[in-house]
Amino acid sequence: MKMVRAVIRPEKTEEVAAALDKAGYSSMTKFHVFGRGKQGGLHVGSVHYDELSKVLLMLVVEDGEADEVMEIITEWGRTGNMGDGKIFVTQVDEVHTIRTGEVQL
Image 1 (spheres, rainbow, N blue to C red):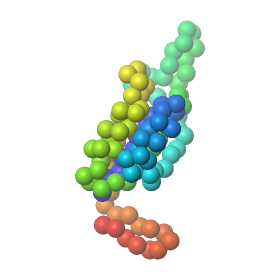
Image 2 (image 1 turned 120 degrees about the vertical axis):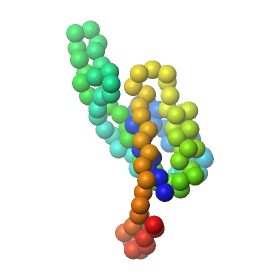
Image 3 (image 1 turned 60 degrees about the horizontal axis):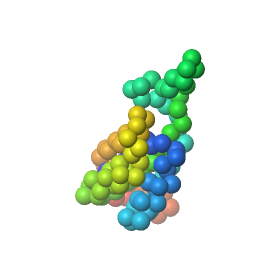
Image 4 (image 1 turned 90 degrees about the vertical axis):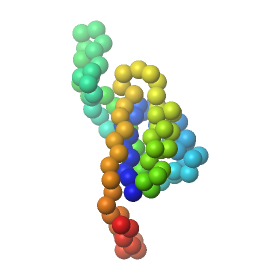
């Protein structure tokens, strides 16, 4: 299994989530986060905004589904401007379901 974490623009959250849901990826966790990328925040005149509002989407999917999930997030989350976000994919070794005690390896 793979964990896909995507940091996206807040205004793109609903579009990305709806596209993932339509493709059958309805299980996800959303976090409201703050941060900055390579651009070091945002400069508007003499004002510097150091931390920008973003949304972190987190999904765990089967290995063969990670590419499709990344394509959906990229297609629906892209504006073409700096600050569109990043996608991180990592291996998941185990999943433990709290309610049932089930373990997936």
